[in-house]
Length: 230
Length: 230
DNA sequence: CTCGGGTCAATACAGTGTATCGACGCGAGA
DNA sequence: TCTCGCGTCGATACACTGTATTGACCCGAG
Image (cartoon, rainbow over all chains, first blue to last red; front, top):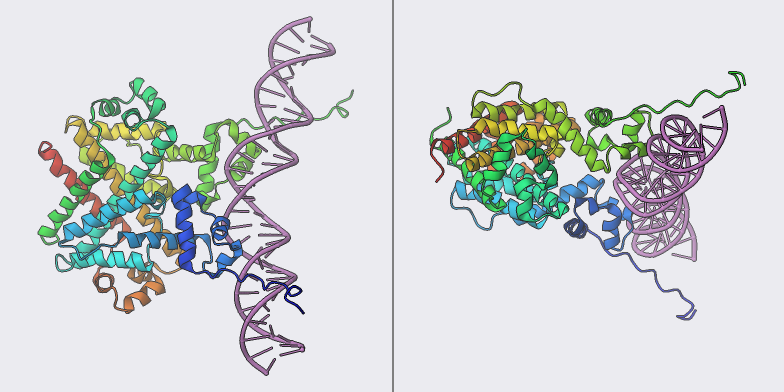
């Protein structure tokens, strides 16, 4: 049998692993949001059939868990934080920055327990920064409170960002009255306090708003760390 | 033509309105979570075809907006709050309670601007409680900070609740080590601070954990209200 | 050289959101 | 009273989703 008669050996499938899968999914989400991530599209990016993925994940939620853990690697602190305040504040700031790079992160944050390796490492490093500063219970409470704050804040910020983008309005216009509908509602006089806030409030950018709230919460933690728990 | 020959007049379609649609959607979500809400199923509950809904909403997200506004009605304060602290704290507590009644609320909270009538009324009443207590800017910052806190906290709590339920583990077991996987990870010794926290931390129920963090944040707000802004 | 096992993908299925379109009942005008 | 147009409703259709099943096919062991 000559070469010409023998068929070309079938192209072996591209080797796959979770890393590659997650990378493809993250890329897809960065481009089109979480809803753009479908098993078919992820597989297509890897020149594979959709069913191939089920060797590495067993459900689509698994993929989201992996994606969350993946970006949490970006949030890990560079070097050991100097003090607890820097550790907690840094965690909040770095999470926010990651969420601005990957807006879909806001949808996942707090929505599922983060028990992947990076998620655990993140909790570990945060708790470690509070070691020796207080008792375990207060430390846990502190981490929970700060985490709750920045999860909520990031969520709100990203939601506002998207709404603004979807409305096509400028930054300023949107922040002022949140589109024609709210402007109209305010004009009815049924929401005087809200109207005053919108008209008299000075516009602050999201970054400083986030930072301000964060400082408040960190101050609250500091107040509890100073005295022993009641 | 006798009666027998004339066909029965066609059953006129059930009159529909947004209220009915939203009620059906909320009921569906209460039973099976947000993902159980499909336009087909909502319509089926109302003895209507799916397309019928498009006269009242123009997209599925619209339906979510309406659902969010609907439950926000449950969060509206009964009577005018005594002081700002009661107003902000009450808002947080009532939101949490609503989220425990409607777990799907956690998925929506903070995910979209709440500009429906009840959402606006909620913001109005909250801002009104701060009227005269501080300047507009500080009031806005206070509302944002507290809102961020409880949105994040509720999200975390509901997520934990669901994970626990899905794992089939008991309350205690789960809270202790979050399932076999984390137990194994902790045993490796790579997460000493986390391990200490899990083993030495006293278990607190979600309600008091929420309340504690809330008090901290409210204290932080109080501290800023006392002195004029820097 | 053959056969068994395991891997991969094609097919299938039930379900989704939404666009299109055809039929049909009702109200207005003759 | 008849008719016509309009507007409303739902059947159908489409592109897509996550996932179960199944069948083909390659590799390595006997």
